[in-house]
Amino acid sequence: MLELIDLKVAYGGVEALHGLSLSVARGELVTILGANGAGKSTTLMAVSGLVRPKSGRIMFKGERLDSLRSHEVVQRGVTQAPEGRRVFGPMTVEENLRLGAYTKKKGSEAALAGVYELFPRLGERNTQMAGTLSGGEQQMLAIGRALMAEPELLLLDEPSLGLAPLLVKSIFQAIRDINAAGVTVVLVEQNARAALKLADRGYVLDVGNLVLEDKAENLLNNPQVIDAYLGGRRAAENQAG
Image (cartoon, rainbow, N blue to C red; front, side, top):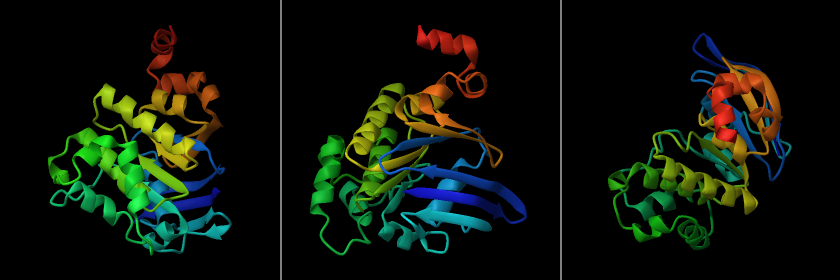
């Protein structure tokens, strides 16, 4: 469904992605791991049309996305829930959600009902100002807003960032449910263990380069990944026990 081919992205004179190539099949849940500055968010923003690649290609269902504007990417079936949630605080929950459907020509009532079914708390707070929601509720809102366009591919950037463990569990269950409903998901996440337990496959980036790719279960047991992202071997053994 999605293919990045020798993708290079630069900010000014600084190259953030150095010829990245990866692919995502229809129905997969794929995670992209890496430390801060590895190029994870840049990858998602390039797919979304929020940054323009220096070179390379971004293919979605056989069509190039890298020359399209962000709203045109949404119209093709790709949406993103950004890092930091970026909800519109002075607007209500429902107003935020309806903004997510702005590219749709037909009504969005079915999509709205689906979001409220996935996140009942949003339905309970549909008239509440988004800026007064808790961090977890705002994350639900950001994901729900991305779902309003009824995407085929959903990009999630750090959905667990700053959330309490119980809320993280709830958000990850929702991601699992979204994927089970047929939406292909690309997940950027620093909680590597939780992401790999959820994903089918994973890619590991390091300062703009792809250094590892494998099935998620294999990456969970990869010594390099354990030492760099899972707290070392002893922590991994304790988690397993």
